[in-house]
Image (cartoon, rainbow, N blue to C red; front, top):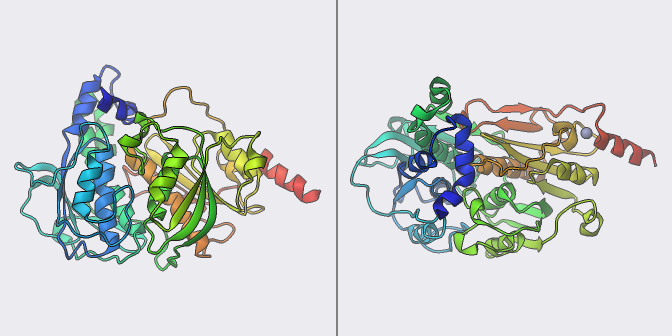
Length: 436
Ligand SMILES: [Zn+2]
């Protein structure tokens, strides 16, 4: 019962593809019977980025209910990896695994039988056999999946962004296997097999190679303490020697249906005030969080008084417009819709604003369908724009001012400028305030 509730949003999204008569039990079974081994040796695990890939991958898969075997030495972590406590990697993951979805835990035992998927880190060798086998690797800003026969030693050093992209891609591969298990229930089996086909040889660049790596984040605000902010903070707390201060503006309390995608939420924190919980989960990293347990709205906007740099991860579209109408010097917006993740940035007086990009309100009265890897991509992409801004390499408007990505098909993200809409009321508000 509680596992079903924890995976409720994930199953709602799976139902996009499935015949309406498909029983919940079939969806749940596909998720929890998908078995994965993550395999790494000590030389491929030596760097902080490699450790980040291993842990991010394990936790993303667990939040979708998969059975994950951790086949790696219990090394001492090089740096903070919230929500896992400092110390030993496997010991910490096993502890956190008991505090994620009810009834789903990590195993440190070798699987006895072939598993659905074996993910190896770098050129780690293994005698384990999986029905699918992939190797993950990364550079500073680029994640990569390749067939094990072409694997090379783990490449990235301390900078963990590309590693997290690699982890997100590999977690998506496990989820695709779960979906292919229930293709007999598909509305359109041919489309489903194409959409959920494996990606075994692919790379994804979050930012251009050579983008400076800056861990000084300064002051910024996060509007919402939900899935996208959680993913962005998950990424930012992993920067080497990170320093910064974020206010998290969020009035709500964590519940069980958040566990499928909130990267810093543990089951034992069920009922916690979300912003205060994020303060606690980021403590011990160089990124301090101050909770503002209020809803950002027309009545509170003035008293809250946003910072010059704001990251928005809120589902409610009018709230994005309201933040934009405060005209922060730099605004990053992350969002998801079904299987797709998007992010954008906005600078006053240049190209399209957040309302130009999201002009239509889309009030949702039912719980929104979501899945771990899509929410994670939205936060990771938003965090990457922020890092490029802090590195001083984001101009006012760039041809890659927004990205729309469907992680099931990582080969085809869409990067584009945000065109200005002539009728945009938010842009008109900037013009009129400039004339005053
Ligand atoms: Zn506009």
